[in-house]
Length: 374
Ligand code: SF4
Image 1 (cartoon, protein in one colour):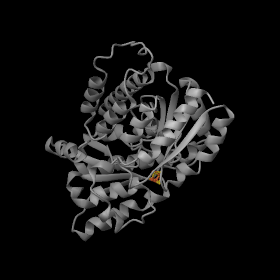
Image 2: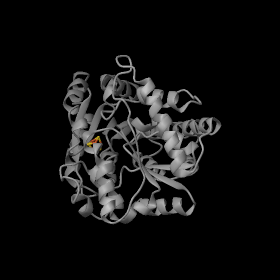
Image 3: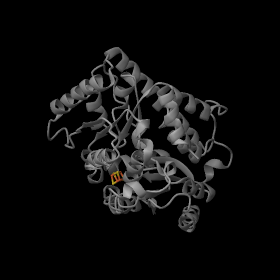
Image 4: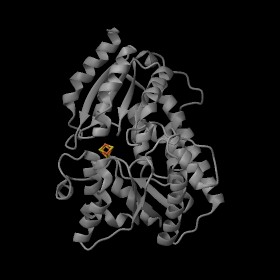
């Protein structure tokens, strides 16, 4: 069980300024450079009792992610944050800051809400570079004002280098998963724990995860003969689903998960100008349906991942009510099948936690299909 509340309390006790962020791709390096600890408010399923508070404000057909993060903040956890940061993504999240603000105000609470607009346009069709750089300048000024901190180019470059080091460690760990030397469940749990830790702690967690696995480790005998699959979705599926996938004899050789692979894939060129750096970060980002302008590259990236990892199948773990992902599944599945790659779609809802055994039979059957080559 990941104790998110306890982790956040520890960050506060350590004297850190904690910024709750959503959705998944905030400008982390800038926050670290300004002595602010960002935590991305995704994967809060295990940190709340129910969705009673959020149900008063959000419709039940909003995705679990939005309901869980709203519940977490409104059900007595707002004091764990010094502010909330949000950029524009899907329609579900569009007015969430205002809803949270109103929900907090009912209890005479408030948090600074910081918002940035990422232009959702193709850079070669509409030049929004000037607009976006201006947004980043405003963000820096607002952070300086709210948190009594100062931006420094040197610190920014150091933060970019440290985040790059962290992402390289994650890639190294992912290679161990692919080889069968580390389970995907351990990898996914470690990264989820990292999400609520300081930058230095994240590096330690990754190093500990890989301790004991020698550099250049060869695939464990017999482990790499299991059929390889790619997991795709917004969140890593619940632990019970990952366990079912691994227990059925499949090996997760890659992931196209927004909170995992799509988040750590991006490593833009190191620059001391945050506007230029994050322009590259967003425009070159690994494709995700929440970054609308990346849509044309999505299929190419997924096929590239399939090719690089020799995956035989792709498992789409859809967040119930996430139109952004669901609109693409039929097209992606069709194109993958044309290339001989088998696909399985499972749906994860707000009510699913560890009670996901209904998926086990389909996961088992999918594994048999891959093993038979049928
Ligand atoms: S899961 Fe889908 S609908 Fe929910 S916040 Fe993410 S992109 Fe939006």
